[in-house]
Amino acid sequence: MRRIVIAGGAGFLGSHLCDLFLGKNFKVVCIDNLITGSIQNIEHLFPNEHFEFYHHDVTKFIHVTGEVDYIMNFASPASPIDYLKMPIQTLKVGSLGTHNLLGLAKAKNARILLASTSEIYGDPLEHPQREEYWGNVNPIGPRGVYDEAKRFLEAITMAYHTFHGVETRIVRIFNTYGPRMRLDDGRALPTFMSQALKGEDITVFGDGSQTRSFCYVDDLINGIYKLLMSDYVYPVNIGNPVEITIKDFAEEVVELTGSKSKLAFVDLPKDDPKVRQPDISKAKQILGWEPKVSRSEGLKIT
Image (cartoon, rainbow, N blue to C red; front, side):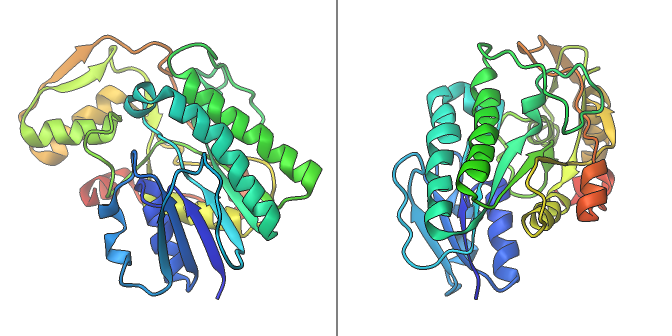
């Protein structure tokens, strides 16, 4: 059996990856310090003899006994509410944590896939965003701790690939949603759903004209798996290119839940991106991947 280490495996995306690889007959080693992940996301896996869990912070030395074939780095706070509350931890996991996991990949001769983000494009001046676009990021703004941690992650990953010959893959993840998102994680979808289900006002930043493109988690996980198994070493956008304004999205959630909630407009956070839409030409061409689940279908499941 092949063996995979998933850092951040108790988080939203990490736990879905644990499910996927166990379903594909892998041995799975999940590492998480649980500062944003949750045991509840993985407790259904504990009876599985091929699943191991280590409560560990990857910014400290990582020791895994035995052979390892693959590694995935999904260890990081990923929502603004988390990385604004934990700026130093966010920078450390993107730098020291990534360095440690790349070192493990080198020592084990394992292929490693690292989770980057559409946030490396910042508040983009190119729309939609292609992988070749270098981004428009404020390195000293409040979001810089996350954006620059991920930009460093990509740089050190390519350095390990070119200098040490480590087999690396980089996925740039766009807005994703689905079961196991934390209701209090501050992102648009869980916030809107929570408010709508409680009959509270839906808080929309700015005038709601900023756009996002939401991908259902199963589609995203499938794309990540295809990238890991491909031969492509440069970053690949994985996301759903169907774009919607935040105001329209809030109204969709209100309608879906049958809520009587009203929209309440509040100040736009500093450096909040005005647009976000992936160009997924590379994913289609190289991986044969594109999203299949419509937003209306995915929202109902969520």
